[in-house]
Length: 225
Image (cartoon, rainbow, N blue to C red; front, side, top):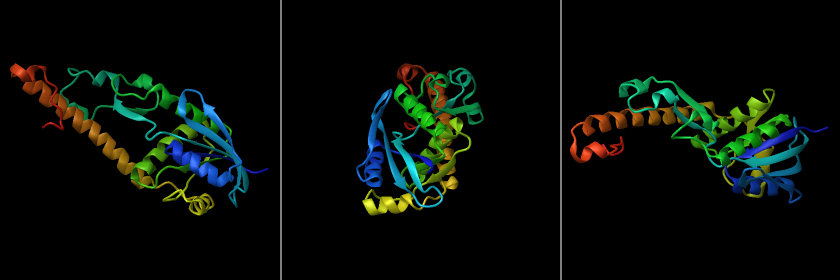
C-alpha cells in the first residue's frame, strides 16, 4: 500500500494547477467548511521512492496562516513604558482567541483546521509554497499546524519556479527540505516590525499628544515619523 501524502500550496490557484498536472485530470474536488476559496483535491500519483504510488490530498493556504501580537496585558497603551515592548512576551498562533486588534479571520481558522484534519490521516506533508523567503516561512507555519495534529509526519517541500506540467512533475519527484534559515529571517523581520512599530508609535503618540492641540487626538505611527 502506498503512502498518504498531504500537499499544501500557498495559493488556491497553485494548488489547483499542481493537482491538475499530477493527477492528469483524474481528481476529486471537495470544498472545505468555512472557506469558499480553498479546496481539497484528491488523486493518485506515483512519486517514486520512498513514497511510491500514493493517495494525495492537495490543498492550500491563502498566504500567511498565523499572526503575531503581544500578549493581551501588554497591548493597552498605558500598560507599560513603550521601551518595554522590545522585550514583552508575544504570541504567534492561528487561534484568534489570543488576539484583540490583530487576529486571523474565521476563514483562516478553517484553513488551519483543514490542514490538521488531513494531516492526521497522512504519512507525509509535502509543502508547495512559493520558493522565496516568504514562502519558506509560510511553509513553516503550515508545518506547525500539521505536526500539531500528527507529530510523526515526514515533512518535505517542492522546489519549483513555475506551474508548467513537466516542471511540476519534476518537483514532485524530487522533494527537498525547507530552508530554515530563510524562514527564520522572515520570522525575525516580522517580530522586529511588530516591536519597533508598536514601541515608537506609542512613544510618538503619547509624547506628542501631551502637547495638546491637533496632536492630542492623532495617532502618530512609526511610518509617519
